[in-house]
Length: 233
Image (cartoon, rainbow, N blue to C red):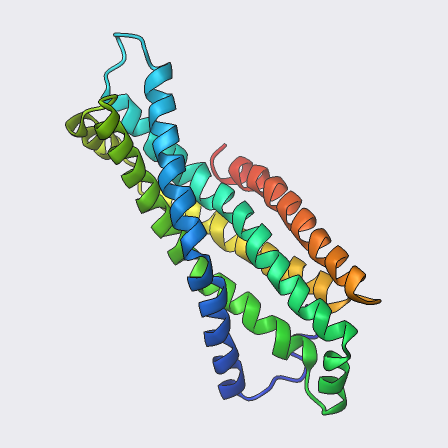
């Protein structure tokens, strides 16, 4: 990380690379994020309705549980774990391949700060695009829960909408965005580290990709607990 800004390139070079990474990291992951969010929101709603069988508990409580579960934990944590597998492995494989084929060495011979040129745009793009991806995941998760509850007859639309509006705390969105930014930094930096320092051949590239996913996923879970303890406890 210390070498990212030692010999900065022209702003136009970084801008082009950041735009490329925004499309790759954000737009490229929208499909899996949307599919996962809709169906997980549906599952959370149906399971919540199944467990809240006490007649003393109103049906709109299902909407409250689904909303808070999606905003506080599912979208910022589970989706980022999925992105750690998709984006993290892609970053590590790309940089690892460039290292073993000596493309990174060629950049350094030309006087280019290879770590800054290759790694910094990925980190910046991840920090920029991730909050938008997580907000989209929240919306689709809540929408999926609403559709599932209405189609299955488990939770009427009026009760579900009342639930997602009842006792809403805007700070929950802020907390989710904090987690998303921290996790985005973990995914991009850890994956870039393992890919950049790959040694060997094609087998080692695969190992670096696996290590990137495992270490970044573990770090996400650890920091999920730390942030929850620091901010919500």
